[in-house]
Length: 323
Image 1 (tube, rainbow, N blue to C red):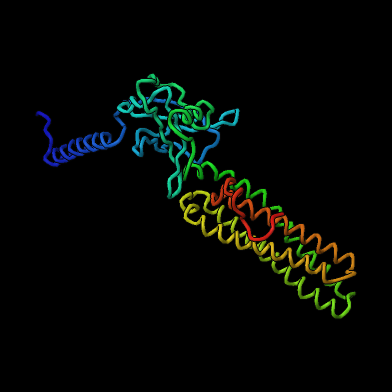
Image 2 (tube, one colour):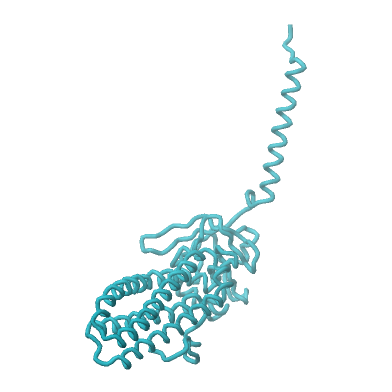
């Protein structure tokens, strides 16, 4: 008796065949919508920093995606190797004078931008597997300056600068903590010294010195808040650009307060004759702390991109005399 399929078995088999067909069709459509089945060219380059790049990050040419990063790795010489895939249909863009540079997104993150020589007739095609020059490489910077334009500018410059800003913040933090410790120690010494002053002098110095210590404490706390705010936005360059003016205005205001506080210290020196040596040392230390805080506030606007060194030559960052 010949073997035959039951109706239920035929239905299940038909369902499986249809499901397999639909799955294959879906995979083909997904592949056509992506670069899965497209031919590709591969290149590699080197950067000084990682800039937050990772595998899958887009490679753009005139804001159009032409490829992506396939791998990124730290080398023995502390440079960052970046492996790049360019779709075969855009291979025509890859020439020996091409340069790849880091580009920032206003909402945070980064991508790589391909810069091509304006005169295609002067360059030779770059073969797959070749080294692609980057804006961190000396030869790449030379090509950008001579043929393409300035290697940095605008938001891209801020992306490159973020790491330096955070390093600067770390260097400034010891000054702030040292100032807070000094203010705490001054408060203790101040109470001991005040007991030995005459009545009028005691009231005069007490009121002014308490006000000065409060000013220093408030400015130090304010600077710590600013640094925390910048540090929290290290992954969002757009937020940092948006708040640049507000941050700079706040820093400028505190710098003006620093000048006023130093003038108060000078006033105490001039008004109080024959002050105890301990009190004099406290005031001198306090003034040194104010000078250091002022330097911190002068450097912050440069770090967050609100001012340039060129502007500093023509304008004064803070109100009052410069140290």
